Each structure stands twice: as C-alpha cells, then as structure tokens.
Length: 146
Image (tube, rainbow, N blue to C red):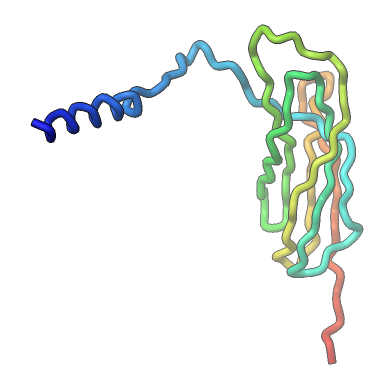
C-alpha cells in the first residue's frame, strides 16, 4: 500500500513537468530586424592565422529594439556580408523613441592568405535596395623567423 501511495505522490508531483506552455503563432511578442551599421573599426591589414576583434557601430532605433548579435555570411572564400541583428518587442509597452548609436564587436579569424572583402549592411536606400559599407583588407606578409 505504501508503494502505491508513493507512486501516486510522485506522479502528482511530476505531472506539472509534462504540461508545457504553448505560444499561439498569432501571439508572438517579438520579431527580428536588421540594424543599420554606420561605422566599422577594422584593421588596415590582416596576418594569416591571427584573430581580430572587429568593432561595429550600429543604430538602435528605439527602446524596444535590442541587439542580438551578428550574422556573418560567407558569400565566397574570402567574402563576408555582415548584418547586425536586433529583436523588436511587440507589445503595448511604451518605448522610448531615442535613436542611439551602439558599438559591439565580433571575433574574426584569418584562415586564408588572400585579401578579404567585407560588406556591412548599412540599411536600405529610398528605393528599398540594400546599401553596404565595403572594406577590402589585404593579408600582410610576415617574414619567417630565422
């Protein structure tokens, strides 16, 4: 009898763990956006196999938009498209309308001995076409240690 009581008690305590929350697809409270990049702190040259912190300044358009990270897309062996990704909270909370410049960094490892081409998403033009800040970074030849 004691076993049955313990089993029922354990089942009663564990049952809330099996009940999950579900978000109705129509009630999402956020969405992702691309943030406009306005400045980039990138070296004039790279050294093969070195790691660099690349600083990116982007626009945070209001108090309901939060930085999530960078999407760095390899479009060719040494070509990179970089987009700053933000999350916008979609609820009835009042957001400040203050536009703010924010700086964040990402780590980049130089794997190829060819110049790198970067395109940083800077927003859309008046026709809705994407605009980019573009940089070409050569690889610096380092003499071997003798």
